Amino acid sequence: MIQKIKGTMDILPAEAVLFRDIEAVMREQAALYGYGEIRTPTFENTELFVRGVGEGTDVVQKEMYTFVDRDESRSITLRPEITAPVVRALVEHGCFAEPLPQKYYYIGSCFRHEAPQAGRSREFFQFGTELFGSAAPEADATAIALGHAVLSRLGLRDVTLHINSIGCPSCRPAYRRALVDYFLAHEAKLCESCQKRLQSNPLRLLDCKNAACVALAAQAPRTTDCLCAGCAEHHATLGQLLTEMEIPYTRDPHIVRGLDYYTKTVFEFIAEGIGAQSTVCGGGRYDGLVASLGGPEVPGVGFAMGLTRVILAMRQQGIADRAQPAPALYIAALGDPARHKGAAIVERLRRQGYYAECDLMARSLKAQMKYANKIGARYTLIVGEREIETGQAQLRDMVNSTQTAVALDRFTLPE
RNA sequence: GAGGAUGUAGCUCAGAUGGUGGUAGCGUCAGGUUGUGGCCCUGAAGGUCGUGGGUUCGAGUCCCAUCAUUCUCCCCA
Image 1 (spheres, rainbow, N blue to C red):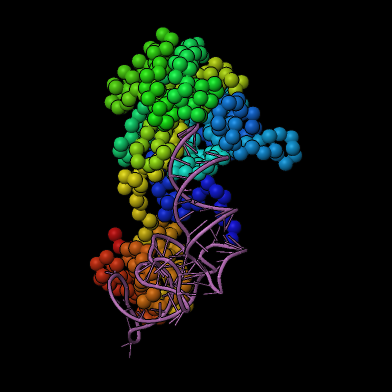
Image 2: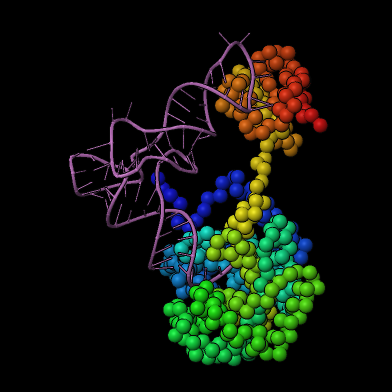
């Protein structure tokens, strides 16, 4: 037997119903905030992600599904995220010549070669939003408010918003230096991987879960202490805005994010109780990204939300149950003439917009009744040879267990 | 990439210290007399005990390998 590939998932109808529900909420909320849908290709030139996400990131260095195209003319990569593709598309179509701000959302699958785990798979689904053109903290607040709105409309509880600022190109280097200096003084106490990160990505030290590192990180200089005047004000204003919008948040100096394009604001919505991968939604500002991909100097803010993590949290909170569609009518038929009649009636009802079923298995009446009950049919129409002759059939109410005679011709559903 | 856990029918699982024909429940299908559901009863189908080696007179049960799943580190949604 050929099995599915590690880290991928089959979504059967019972679960697909939930996915569709959640996606509908996302689409509705996005529309309320003025975001329009954008769809981009599943694969892109590898270079797009190397430049967009950042050459030194784990995503680019060891997680991309990269291959050479059949004609060997180029290197292609299955998208590991969708922000860079969106920017590419907008630059390519000259969209930034249109009035700003511009707001887009997407729902699609991404691919990363990682070790699968609770809340982490190799193909995963993201709902993401991007807002371009505004450098104002109101734009950051808009993005966060949209994420917040989606999560709360889904009914999720115990999701906390963590925000931080990692500064801009003018103040981040100074912070980086301060951080390295601090940790260098305590280098011996750091865990092995953090000692390496000291060179490669010192910001990540703040994120480590090792007890010793956590203790050191608690005393480390904070990004927010080293921000330039502009970044500091931006961050302060964002806090005020969130408060005025009645969106609870905590300032968390440990939120740093692993994609290179982030500047200033970074944030995560964290859901407890779904395992180690608890960030249900993460994002931030990326003021340099558009220009770095060949577009104009246009700032942006956005986030990505992991559908499967949202579902994990919903399941854990017992709000993931969805009813399967049940037919309004099931036609139990005995004999070929009755089955033919039943098929015709069902087809007519379906054209009228009703969900109706009839027997396709040529089973006994008893078996058909059992089946009708199992699929939750509201009514069952019983049609046998007698009914074909008289033109009168039995309509059984499956909830009240009552039956009435009805005319087969021009049969209509009750109510 | 590195650790830990698990792998018996579609699903959830029994199978003490290795020993006569592999459980059970749910689900599926068929019945419980003459054309009728939900409860109950009966029966049937369905398993290379993940796979391959090894130890042994004998392995689902022990050992090794391998694959898969899962959790964690890492990273991120």
